[in-house]
Image (tube, rainbow, N blue to C red; front, side):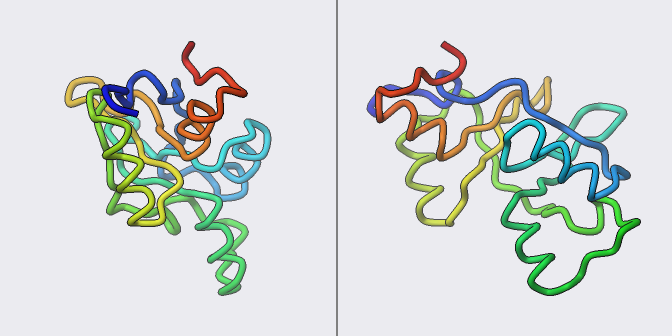
Length: 135
């Protein structure tokens, strides 16, 4: 994975929602899109505010914290580890293993969230079974 950069393997565009999106809508979006997370962004400038993952939903269900009228703002993780498109995939893969992450948002100082690197993206690249996106 030497000299392979995140920008080459990341999934883009990223499915985003606003902080006031109902949790059930975010869950339906993830199911409909076949994705394991949504990124929460500011409506005004598109900057990253948080992330909500399938793992978060497992914790919510296990703790029976579900509120039908709750918004993603109530459950999102706000201390989000991010990367940029020029980071080496090996470094991000190491980070994901060390921290137990499955999703790391890819951000740009000017554009905000530009992609998502996932364990699926890295596995697809390594397996040669599926062409990573974007091609």
